[in-house]
Image: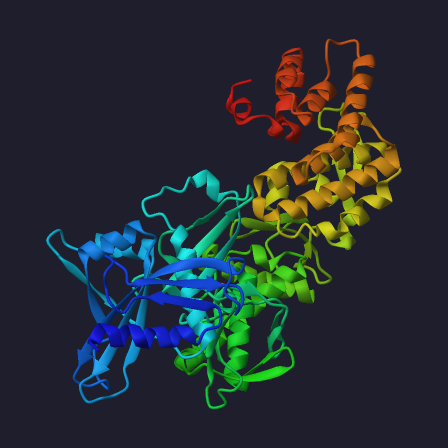
Length: 604
């Protein structure tokens, strides 16, 4: 018996042990390219009804000196590869036989059409053969049948076919077939040169095909995902951190963009986690990150929910005093911002200079502790204290001691009843005074840049003056200023729109469903969500009412309604019918910001 006959015998023996496989492999090679085929059945009874498919096979035998040490490769001629390429691939067996009488070892490679295509593309024009890497045929029928299934499924691969990009949008599922030798417990690049697999796709229309290319596989636990496990150290807690595995034994926990933990698995009892820290520009984020880090340096322990883990921050110990000093500064600054009802998330630390920092340190005890200090003032006055791109609006009032002054937050409840607005155009002998709130004395730009607005309590400032019609007019102006501010400052959009909505609803409660309040109500909703059909009916009703109640060709209400319905041509036509003063006012209102960009940029 020659070596090829022995090789075929070994392969047949292995296949015959598999209930669902039927080998038809000739021991005398009389057919070009292949030595036969293996049929795959759905049961141990091999009938026409149980037949699933057929896989072509090629068997080679090779003698080696020592089966304990040998190269698991084999050269395949170009002409053979080209033939397999045209015929849907082949299951390629090589049986290695030792000169010392050792038991032969069967190896294989699933040469799929896409895989052969890669091999041929990597061959030089004059190259006559290509060496392929082989894997040992596993024991066990289940594993061998997996190999045959990959070869069968790969027959639908069509090298050179172009998959329409539009078709990808209609793919409803993909299925990966492997020979069972690909580990799926860590990320990898699926490469047909070294691995045996095929990927099937299915479209919504029922089309089934095979995907070509190189694929990256990332297990779910290696994907960055948010987890509902609080991570704490001392008083600092991160409620919903991001987590991803980075190796077999390590997990990275991202508490924030500036703070990451590397944590060993629980069964790695001797391993200690570590911390990665980079400073963030944001006051609240840097305060929280650095506070957590310094607590770690003291305790050496963090908690994941109820579970404790050891953490090491030795790399930061050389800078410990400097970090402690910076944390004290962050704590002082944060206490000031929170003390005036500001949001420390808004404070950009990189935008602060030393002079402003010194001014803030001077003001903090006056604002938060009631400390009075000497100032060169001759009367009470307002002060605007810059804090990066924002301002803190303050008032200096006479203190208990002569020559000393106290500093008060402009929006403190103490000052709510203290403001009156005068109409400077009114006759001197008939002054017009209106009771107002601190929100009414700020211009549009001032209000948008004010950090200490304390908008959560805006209605408390207006409620005492609800009976005064002129004050309600001022409140309506403040609604418009808040909407302007929301359009300009994206980082505070939700804060401004929420306050504008609550104040506008307060006006509706006190004045009824006036058209201006309904328009504001609708443009606020327009900015946060889609207007629905009920809203459209309301807009059309407002527009009809406005048309009946004016003798003029049109009104600003009609322009606003057209904008809200996104009928911009109608809005432009109505706008042109307004007089010059109305056009100037309209173009300054926030409703006009909802017009297309070309209208906002044009000269009015």
